[in-house]
Length: 124
Image (cartoon, rainbow, N blue to C red; front, side):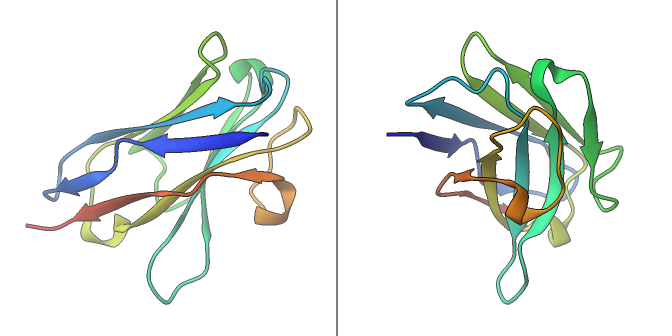
């Protein structure tokens, strides 16, 4: 059974940082693109970042460019999202997702596997 488990969320002050992790089990995703999305209350799920197999390509949503960094460690079957310079509008549940193809996608329907999410709250 494939599972994606996120961790690293929490309450942080504006301007702070967090490192989100997503550990995959049940199969290896080294040949697959991975992504992060987020969803705030009352809003649609929003694309945050994606990384291709091997980490060759990365893409980011406009609202997080320059502040967030996606990376992967295939030896650990883990994807990370370093989130810096956090703003209150970054508050959301952050989801990790995996594709069944090596190329990236910013569309939610491009991903087959999803984690349960980790809450990030930015507030003073």
